[in-house]
Length: 383
Length: 252
Image (cartoon, rainbow over all chains, first blue to last red):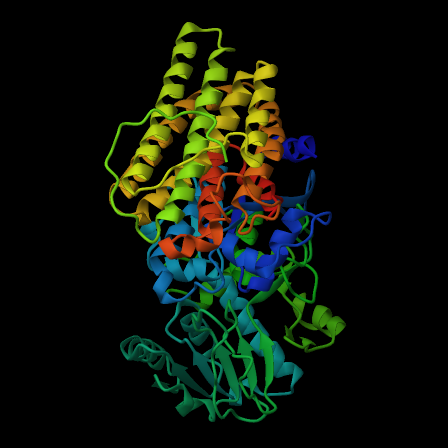
């Protein structure tokens, strides 16, 4: 046993790392599953109270190796990229503002691990990017490592998901009223820029009115019809398409009285929508997810643990962006800062991702798939 | 419980007994036992060192650790408690036996790994936590000794990093073998509840449930110790994903 663990490390060490994915677990259940894999099947899983006691003390570190394959063939076979998944070990119940400094330190620690491993590009997943998107100068000194929030591809998959869901439900997106919750964030504003030109009306909701006004002015200049409000309840009954892209520490969003049969995309990590939210006939689906079709391997095997989705090889768009750029050999900080995602950049990263077989994932929600899997693969994912 | 090794202390006047004194008495008993074990370990190490400078270093360390034990005993007197020690207590004896196996094999590097990486990580982290909450000179002594122990680790790290450069895989295998032996015992000591019966160091019942009365907890001491251990292994250059699995597999 000892020989095997250390020997694997010895072999891995000699291999080059193209990308690193920095993430954290969104629930204690997910964290428990990660630790259960690390303990191995021969040991009893840790009790929940022990996990809550131990996890906050774990310093940021690599959890596993990740190999991703492209559908593009090269002279020596399919293009591949090799990476690491690095967990910042932010405890799932410590994502709120009270822990912001501690969590930034954790993301910095995870970034330092990526730099030390020699990763050429690092994707910042979930709250890692929210913590860092306006503070890239807080990352450790880099040498040949670049960082991307991955938000551009997340926006791409959210927008694709909205369009696909409208098509599946026979809705004319051009006649819809779109509500974006968390509209001034990097992902929310990116979605607004991509969808405002094609929907009838846009409702933007966020806490910061000044940022809302600024975004609205930008979009109105391009001819979009829109309204802004910090009061979400004011809008929720008017929208028939909703994107939830707020930075919430836990699933706590209540949309209030929502249009029956509204399409609601929950694109948060952690999820935005409260399990108590009464959706009254609305069709909810999770957004911002892509699927790798060329091949995805974890060592040790964390399939279904680090990517807890009902379909194989589904990964959040923010992490996929780094993987796609690594497969493309474009080691550049594609997404940085806040509020700079444009439709052109979204199309560019979607093209790169698709070239390597990374497409919109089949749509699903907490109850399972929301569409026919085969239909998804043929009509949309490869389209 | 018998005091097995006499600790040479200066005479200090006792102050009145605080309600928390019995808790500090047990915390000090564990610390003194650990320091005396370290004294014995460094003395044993001096016997296998070939280089006279290494012999002198080991003996100097042994004296420093004995001084720490004496300082803790003095702090016990200040709060009016008799601090015992028991290096033959079940967990501590297992730790000593693990170290002595390295001595028997004349494995200098193994000895450093056990004492400096594993036992000192535990000491540095737990003393630092106690140092933050213990009152007056008791807290100051724990904090000071935590800092001194950290310096020991720095000295050994340089030797161990050099050794790892020679053959990383062999080195990591050795650390893992010793981890299974030593850290399993330390994890049992650090468990939130003592599941193997009385530890033979606490003066009456187990101190762990009472730690909250002095703003400590067994979970916190364990967490801080494992964190220090992981960070120390990181500094050695052992891959984080490997050491994470090692720690995740420890008993709780």
